[in-house]
Structure formats: structure tokens, C-alpha cells
Image (cartoon, rainbow, N blue to C red; front, side):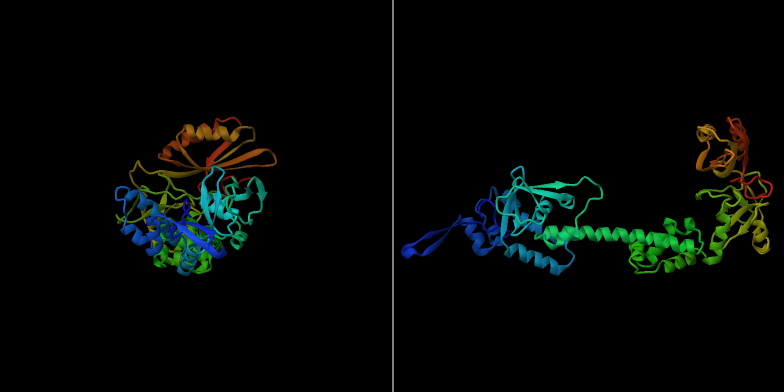
Length: 441
């Protein structure tokens, strides 16, 4: 134990000789510092340092075992498990093995190549896939002996990880704790993903607007209300069945004005055609008559832009929704005249407006590339595109983009019409569905 002290820093050279009468005599050879540490403990050894000049370096070396204790305490949440690990290390004997570079690694008696890998580095342990001892391939549960030269093989796969079977044969507390931590984290991540899926399924089942209800702000507020530290913890609780997804959905709906407000939001945010939603922020450029401080939003069902005739509708918990006067939803809104308000376009140059167009063309190679290049050349921000081709080789493309100046739309449509193969292009408003051509199958 001279070159490699025991865990409690005990150092001594042991030898046994045959004494008078053939009786064995054990002799322990050690320095005064070693004897003081062995008889009175580590604390006494620190107090009675003889070499004050080199004390700092020596104390740094002696503190290694204390830092190891702190690491174990951080890695092990269960106090009983921590104490068991500590007793095992203090009382258990050790074996000393070598890395391929000749470094000495101290391990508990009976350790395996997996224990060795985790002693080298946590990631080496997690990615271990095989081992070679003294130049020979051995199973991962092989017992290491003093003086063995151990070389482990690691996987480069991003999904590499430990096996649960390793818990049955590893001996070192470090390896056991690291393996358990890995599986705890993996289960946590799986629970979070299950929670996200369950919440999304519950909202789709009730036909609720996910984009609005699952906003970061609403989820953070709900997590705080339900006493969870963050949104990830909320998802994890759903995935681990600590709280039902339907309960979370109900509280989300209630926090945003109840079911009537959610139903109104569905009607207003449904664009004509299967296109993705995108929430716009900022001043919509609409003035509500008689009211200055009110939240105004442009309905996605008809995407009004300056110049369109518009009406306002007071929603539950979502301010005033602005529709085109010929929107398909206006007939339903007029059934509640007390919630209709007068609105008009204001003067603003900072607002981006949502526009959706449909392009009909003869299908050919690079058609989509040519159309998108024309739109980009006219400085419009494309949000989404959907393309389908009919049996008669007619390509129908729908684009959703943002424009700062709606009067610029005419020049954009004119430029798209000049693309080779395009025979029609028009804006889709969701208003005159009977008059506008439908997408042909």
C-alpha cells in the first residue's frame, strides 16, 4: 500500500517472516507520517504536518478521497445507498490494474472491465461494447486481477448506452451510480415525450387550436399554477401518469377564456386548404371605433389586407377579430350582432400581412423553383408551400407569404403569371369559394 494507498489513505509495507520456533511474524514498515495517519486518522495527520513548506501540495493530494466522497454524494440521491457505497469502499479490498498507457487504476475486489471503463470516464463506461485483458478478448463480466492490463472498446453510435444487465455484476459504487443515473435520465426523457404526445392527442380529440393553447407563455403559466418547476416537468408528469392530459387541456382552455373562445379561435384560424398556421405579432393596422386600447388580430380564415372591406367581432378572451366582409364565417357572426364592432384600416407601415395565393400551371421540371425564385425576387417572405399534380399533369401550388405592402400584390401575381407554364394565379381569401376554382384531384 505504499504506491497505491487504501481508500482511507492507509500506507504501509507488509511482510511476514518466520521467527524463532517456526512461528510467522508480521512486520509493518512505514514512516512516522504513515504511522500517525494509521493510528490517529486523517484529521490528525493534517494537523501535525511536519513539512510546512510542501504542505499545500500534500494536502491537495490527501483531499482526493474527500472530493471523491462529495462526488458520490452528488451522484447518489438515496442516503442509505451512499452509506453502503462508503462502507464498501472503506472496508473492501482493492485490485490494481493498468491502462494500455501504463496508468494504475484502483478498483474494488471482484471488479470487471465495466468498472474499469467507468473509473476512466463516465462516457467511456456508457459507450463500452467490449474489452481486452492482457491482449485477450474477454466478456464484460470477467473478474479483473492485480496487474491486468485492460483495454475497452467503445461504440461511436450516438445512441450507445449501458445495459441494465451490467447492474448485476459491477462492483464499484461509481459504475453502479452512473448506470442508474443514465437509465433515470432516459426514463425521464421518454416520459417527457409521452407527455407531449398525450397532450397533443387530447387536444386533437377535442378539436382544439393547438397553436394557441400550447404557446410557451400559457404552458409556463399553467406549470407554475400546478406547482411544477418548468414546462418539461409538466410534460414529464403527464407522461408518468401523475396528472391526466385531459385535466391539463381543461385548465389550458379555462385559462384562455373557456370553450366558447376556443371554438371561435378554431373558426378564425382555419385557412382555406391544408396549410400550416403561423402566429403574427405586432400592430395589425386596424382601428376599432370608440376604443383605443384593445387587442386586435386579423382572422386567418379570410386573411384581410388593407383595402378589403372588413368588420370586427369581439371574441371571448382574445380581443377583436377582424374579418373580410364577405368571409364565410360572417353569417355565423351576424347571429350575435351585439358583438360586432365598426373597424377600419389605420395608417401603418410596419405591419406584415398574410397573403395566400394559388398557382395553376402545366407540370414541368424546376417549376416550383422558378415560382419561388420570382416570389423571393419580389421580397416576399414565404411561410409555407403545398404542391399537388393532377392526372392531366396540371400542377396546383399554394403559397402563404407575408407582405409589408398589400398594393404590391398585383405586381407579384403579374410576375408569377409570366413564369413558363403558368396559366393562372390568384389570391385565396376563403370568401367566394363557389366562384374560385377548387383544387382538382
